[in-house]
Length: 179
Image 1 (cartoon, rainbow, N blue to C red):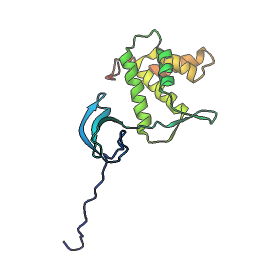
Image 2: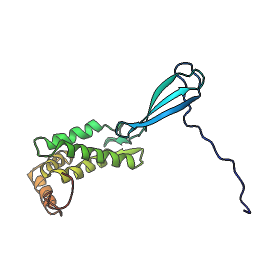
Image 3: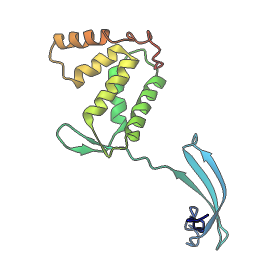
Image 4: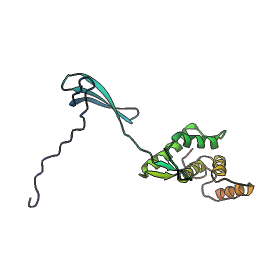
């Protein structure tokens, strides 16, 4: 064991919480359970000073990147805005609510997983277009026409031609697993 030193184990106490009854800062966890489909931990605690029991809920705080708009302004990511844009494009289209929610969740997870503090609004728009392209061609063209500001029928034609040349179209001809 030459060159190695014995190091005392590091002890970190993660269950210290102030008692809401007496204010003591030493409590003991008596029970922990996953709740809310595993997104939350419910803990039963007991104060070592006064003996009172109480429940706490623990969730991970997942911070979404801020959105940098075309004019340079910044705003908080708004999942409702993302969903509303997709729903507008998918209005009266044969796409299930589950497929839409799954697409919204995939985009949200991709943004969070990027680890970036800020993301360009155009990157979110492109992610929405990719999701819509997999879900429904008509919805994709609707969204693209607004997002890319089509000015005339030729721009629609060009986008439709580009779409029709892509492998796996129409959706369902390739194993896209999105519907």
